[in-house]
Length: 84
Image 1 (tube, one colour):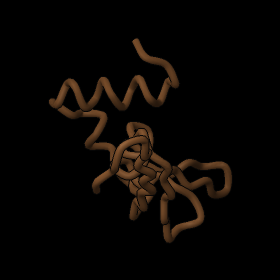
Image 2 (cartoon, one colour):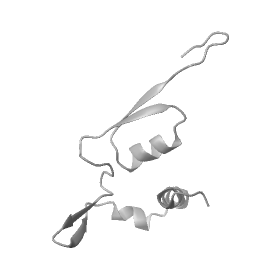
Image 3 (cartoon, one colour):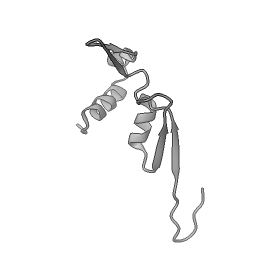
């Protein structure tokens, strides 16, 4: 994408999927974006379903036991809504 003198580049990004990767990308982008998700809510495999007073996780538990320290720290900070 090129820009001339005194021109501003406007970029809009489409993100396919509102799972952990799509939400992380949206959180880090410095451009306008739109998340395209086929389900009613975002979260991908990191969602929880409520049924008859019980909570069931779709999956994603492997993230809690991740050995990727920086990835886990990134997720934990974003979940808390603050940078530590």
